[in-house]
Length: 160
Image (cartoon, rainbow, N blue to C red; front, top):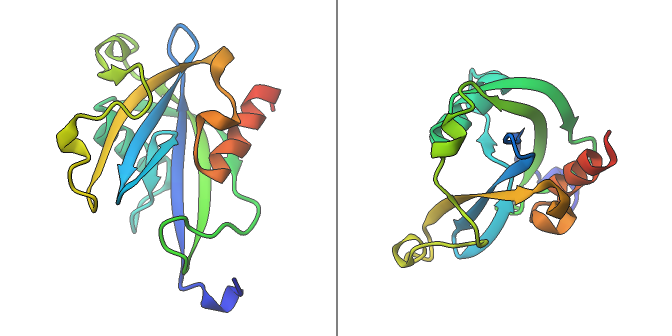
């Protein structure tokens, strides 16, 4: 797609959160009829910093209060949005840490990917998400759906 067809740049911010067992938190999502697995996080709002955005997104998606750690990666290539082909995506990744590690024990998670209740996917134009832990040894590029997330998984596994 020629760059002149791009209407805007969307900034997305994601967090890598591990628990005491070194499992990584993933978000299985149903969005307008499609299924995706990604890291927790979302869109930067006007007037918001990237770390503020990630704190807000974690609270909204998980109910957790998190502290944002080191930067991991920022997209360094052109990536078109999978949801709107006139948007360019800029994604930023950080480590995230639960302010209260015991709260991780209360986190409502699933074991099976895309384990949605029927009502969560009944509306094909709707959106739902469920959280899931993945064991560090089982985390790989196929564990996530988004192309930028795959790069981050590869970096994490390589210890970069």
